[in-house]
Length: 290
Length: 133
Image (tube, rainbow over all chains, first blue to last red; front, side, top):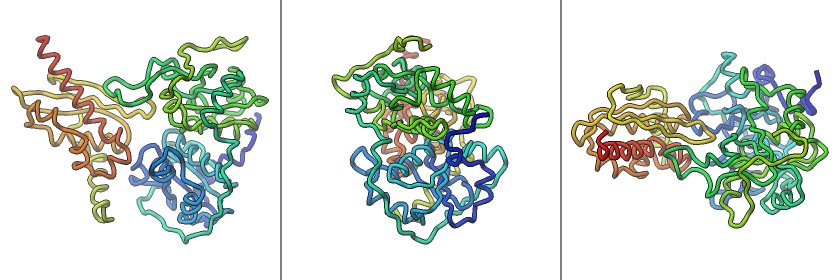
């Protein structure tokens, strides 16, 4: 069996269970469900919420470098701390937080394979006590723009015919679904996808049976089969950038693709922009199955 | 909000999440409507029964995050005896008063899903009445 490109980026639940009291390891829960941490979490884990913790309070953007340094320091994270993320929804937001920590240059980052679902299935313990750690001194690097795409870069990607991966559900991709029935305020002004983007829902990278990542072979077939190959510059997007950070993690660390960006503006930006191209049908790809 | 207030609010939400009120289908409902979010699998189906112009019974089924499920549970506790007009007047501020402004601001879509499904249910009920269904 072919190994993942960077297997050290993925740890199993047992690995985490053996390091609950390791002061050099900080376990971070990051969920879509805002109060899930409060219902119980891995002993010693701290909470980082994608919306209230990681976002700027006014602009649509992430924490500034200074704010990120404050966050990490307050969680007792130094530049040498091993940070392990886990969460609900097959680690959607765990990967989002991982991506942001990498954006600010943290080196030793890991994802707990299977997330909360696997930890629970194995009957491992949860606690409600919120731990506190001695404040650390954290120095962030300048943002790593090589892993983040903005809309102008996405437009350049479209015009250059370079690959984009739409990781939303098929109905979001075709524009059939902007919002669910009875909830019209959800979504964007327009439905569809960015021209040229191929549809590979993020969940295809996960084994439904145990919520873990699929094997390297299966992942390679999944992405290369749609023209997403490691020799090309790739941009992944979804609705707000959380599902696509999951795919970004898979492409970069499970498969070792060197040039992958997450477009965090995603469809909630593109689908609301004036005068940008949108497709609804699957692109006609040369020799690539739809 | 003080830490104590916040703790009380969280306790209220956790109680509704872990011990949901009025949860279940209703066979003789006058109207039932399903609503939810793409992407984050919050789903609610609300059932309403009326006695004249007033709600005589309410229930829901659903799945999703702590806030969406706790919020709809808490909402249903408030509805019995209300008139249709009063139901239509319920707004986001009502939900903020019920489960806490901070929670609503943090996850507005989740917190108000139950309210939105309620409003959709009332529309469906009115339409049904007009059509004589």
